[in-house]
Image 1: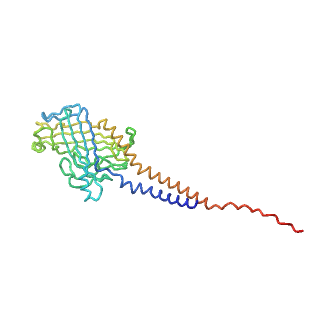
Image 2 (image 1 turned 90 degrees about the horizontal axis):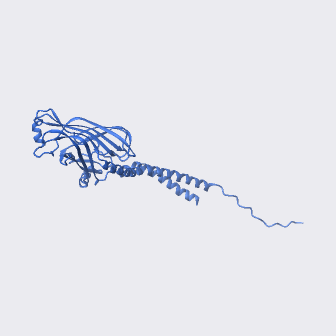
Image 3 (image 1 turned 135 degrees about the horizontal axis):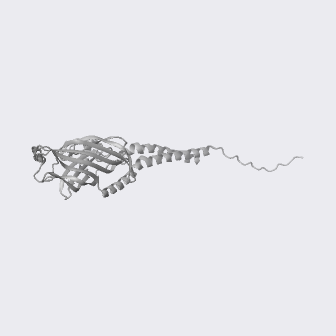
Length: 330
């Protein structure tokens, strides 16, 4: 009976020990992915900002500029691209909507971001664009890969339509969550005017005829939870200028927007809570279950060897049988 039990335990030990690396290195890369139908929104604010009044073409101080960012998963588009891409694909239709203190639109820039659901690497397909202009992204945008590493990454800047390094600057604690801090600087770069302008009758084409150009620079900061690769917080020190041309009335340049953009407090709290729950799911596949199965396998193996050793011990000597006394001959 002991021999049979030890063999069963040995089989279970081998199964658990073999399942441990399979779960981490085979199952996790295939199971961990961004859902195709994900929707998220975020509100950022720049308080005490500088904003251009297109009516007078003068920069003025305002109490607040708000930026509403939405990312909506396009399931139909992702399924269509998957047929030719041969892998799980996510299509995010994004919109960055900027409004002044009066609630009126300053600009709105739509995007379509297509990427691998598992690795977050860009997937190049028809429809990839920023503000209606076709682009070919390199590097990440919005989200880092699962199990983010302590290294620099390539990050796509939608304003400038370029990819530049975003540098790992160290590990920090953000509201009880261990995060990696990344920073990217985009130097002054000539960028296109948004197709949706804040004043009726002014279009990018009409501005281009005046010779005026739009320039942009930013310092982009992200605090990223490394297990999920999700940013829990972000900031931008953002500046835009209009330069040259007859539109400025002889001036060399004028500030179009300048402000320190930060995520609004209520969105910080909800993002941290969401990331904490997702972190637990990823850790279950990468750490808790693999190590738990390995420890269980070792324990079962030890118990199997113990029972096998017990079954091989020699039995106790059998008791001496009592015999009737024999008669003594005379």
